[in-house]
Image 1 (cartoon, one colour):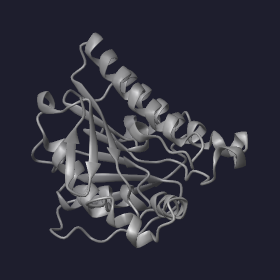
Image 2: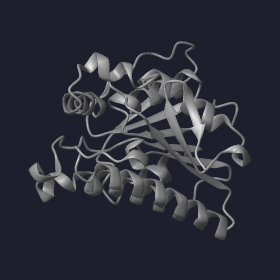
Image 3: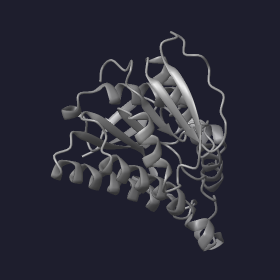
Image 4: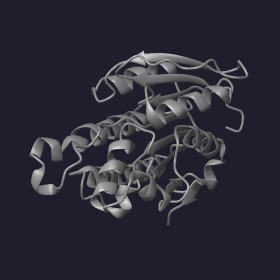
Length: 248
C-alpha cells in the first residue's frame, strides 16, 4: 500500500483532534478518505489535489454502521480514533456512569468495527489501526475507567489479528498508543488535570513530557504505518511527537 491513490481509507472519529489530522494526512497522501463522525467537520483541500474526503455523519457505535460502511466503500484501511472524553476526577469523585463512559463508547466502537472487518472481510492486504492510548501502559488515575478501556482496545485488536490468521485472512490489525496530545479535546483537559495534581503549570508539566503528539504528527505517522509492508507491522506501537515506536 505504498501508493494510497485509489485505496479508500475510513477514518472513524474524523471530526476533531487526532482523527481530523489523520483524515487530512491520508487525503494529502492521495487516498480517498471516508471521514466518519457524529458531527459535520470542515477539512482543507488536499495540498496536491489528489485525495478526497467524503464525510459520513453517523454514530460509529451503532451496531449497524460498521457493516453498512464497509459494504458501501470496500476500504483498504480503517483507522479507529473515535471515543469519549473521560471525566477528569479522582476515583472517589467518579460515578459509575462517568467511570464507565470509555467502556461504553471506545470499546464498543472498536468491538463493532473489528468484528465487521473480520466478517465482511476486508479485501486481502487490508489494514486496521486502532488508536488506543499511552494510558493503557501507564494508567490514568484521574480518568476513571479510561486506561482499562484503552488497554482492552489493545487486547481485542490482538484477538482480531489472531482470528484473521486462524481464518487465513490477509488482514493486518495493529494498535497505536499515543502519549499526551495536548491540542486535542481529550488531551487538553487531561494535561490541565495532571499538571494541577503535580503542582505544576501546564507549561512546566508539558516540558517534562518530551516531544508532544499533534494531529499533524499523528497523521504523518499513520500514513507511514499504513504504507508499510504488512509483514513489518508490529502488533502495537507507542506514538510520541518523535514518531512510532514498536511495543513488544
